[in-house]
Image (cartoon, rainbow, N blue to C red; front, side):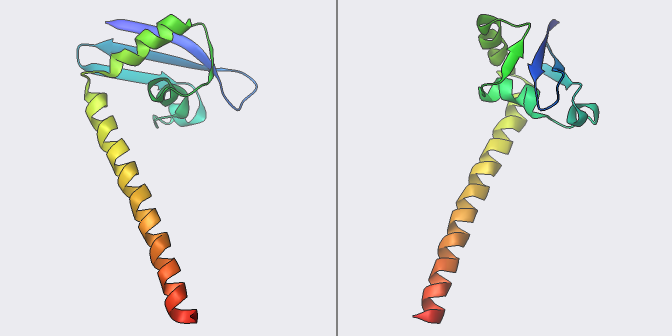
Length: 110
């Protein structure tokens, strides 16, 4: 098993502790922020895999780059891909809805 622990400066005055471990195709991510304490995926560890710029402490840029590769081939990677596809579909539906409301406006008042 591989395990990396580091800190991320969030909105609180004290940084949050993040731990990411991988054993085979099993990836586990933990954070002691309020969302993480409820076992809800939080932005502090998700940001690692999304490439978001956060203030990381206790991990070098090279270690962070290596850590980003850990998602490949894991159970999390496949669910993550489904979430991203769902987000793309939601964005497309929002744009379509906006266009339909614009069309409705033209139909009603022109």
